[in-house]
Length: 392
Image (cartoon, helix red, strand yellow):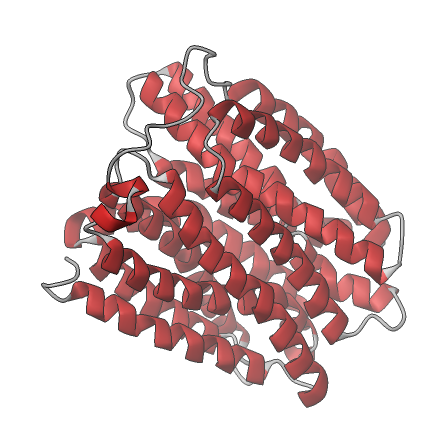
């Protein structure tokens, strides 16, 4: 990989750290701190705010799936960087739950700019430089972002309240926004704004991979549900358990640190045994990890569960998107957008359902078991994909 390509990758990673790690997921370690500092902020409220965030992400993914002009995608990506900074600052300036919900919606939009739009720009830029897109390295930025935000919150909690923490995270995001803006290059004006409209990726009737994509979409929906419930409430669940309270923020740090190298690992496993077989293994490991974080387990078991969760959730995303890239090499953006919509819709309904369940039951055990149950259902489309007639 030449120096220009390295800069492009690190620019993309900076975008993911800001838009996904900070703007989208800093809310997870900050949720129990906000609940302690804001009277009347319930588990159900926390779930609804998380749902607002994912509605924003879903809306951004839907928009990206219907955009064909690469120059417009580039402009929206750069506005997404600004939005990530503004939404974090805005969270510190109000305690109105409706305004918070609006801010979380726009934070979700910025996350889609970083994860969906930026990934396409990075892929195009690497191809223009004659490099094979190493998207496993790029997607490691999500894990780095989770770890950066979690470590910042854990350290700052000793002397900053929740408002000051949101402001500090926005300040931390400023150099990341600058690096992403500088190092992710805009596409040259000579490039066609719209991709070719012929081929299987754009003609459903001629698409030989339609059945595979539908099975993958069903599985990916289940992955989104299982992921979001665990990602939203893990820290709050551990904080509410006295014996596990000291490790709660560091469990989320471990999730991020495990996620950072996971895409490269699962990318290699997928190349060796096939993406579907690798997905099934990652799926089973994630189910085991979530079950290990349930109340009643000792701290070492919970930390191992957090590690397994972190080591698999981005690996699943990378494997799925790699599969789409192999099925639709000429124009992967539209099928990627459709799968992201499925993943995102699950992330909208998951926190809302889980938050209400936790509010009425007084425990996160039920929502976490529901998450593993939905994940388990997602194994069936993958097993079907593995059959000779439908998959690898």
